[in-house]
Image (cartoon, rainbow, N blue to C red; front, side, top):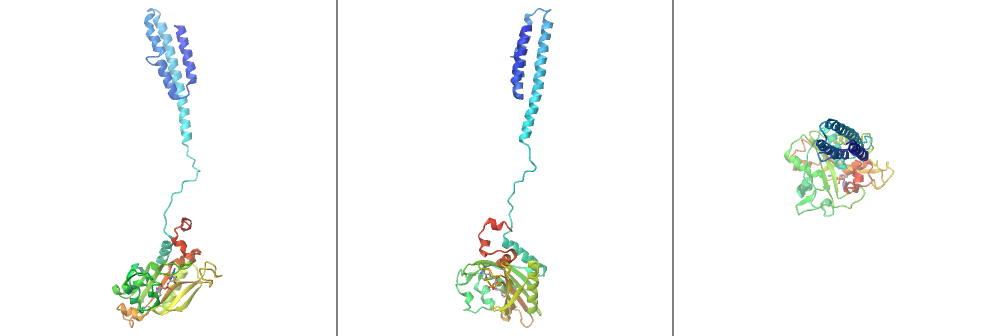
Length: 339
Ligand code: FA5
């Protein structure tokens, strides 16, 4: 018996040394201590011994059994610990690694500048209203005192959809509509798109945005218009900027003006944006023509008013040094992500 026990012990030690994982140790334990294993076989052979010998032999087998079980347990725990360590090592998080950037949507630069413009006018007491992109010749031209043969009605400038309907050429199409439903005092701004069949260049597009402003009350003067525009531009640029006013003609205002801002893209040195003049036209404005007030059923003897139409793209270009209006519609992520 001693010999058989020694052989099993040797065999077990050899195999335990070769076991490199906790699973292999478990298999080894089953192999040696399981029902079909060598130790159980020894137990079964006890019946072949005499009554006197049996307790001694039985004790020897139990010692071996205990030994195998303890070694297996220790080895199993050691290997399991190592395996856990390796697993944790592989799952380790490097907190100093730069995180993955999520793509965040944002407003288009024109929407951003519109919001900026509207927030300034809201602070100045203007409310916001909208008028349609597709409108009738009446609201876009006729109600605004345009003669039938005015050049702006020409097919060169206007995208006609039918004889009567067109893509509005300016946000001034809100004026008659507003006067039809509201009586003075009226103090409104109207942001929106405008469409003109023009040559596209660095400063002009066939599709652009305007913000119309409109104020009618008793005793509204030209000085009110100038000071409103002045304080708007100073707030918009966050600094005192150089402006110049030129008299101009629009059929729906009298007198009419256009205002230019010193070109901030080239610091007034001359560039394609300012056509080398150092100035960029940003707004058309004037005192609302008595005929327009009459068409809106407002008595020009009682009320007066001013209106303007601001070019939104040009303001964004001046504010952020953008050298070509076409960038706003090219959808280039490298450009858009800068805003
Ligand atoms: C008008 O559109 C008038 N409705 C403005 C107005 C309103 C005058 C109320 C009087 C009273 P004008 O065509 O000048 O005016 O356009 C106004 C502004 O829109 C210009 O100063 C310019 O900044 C911008 N603008 C005009 N055409 C284009 C274009 N093709 N591309 C980009 N911006 C333009």
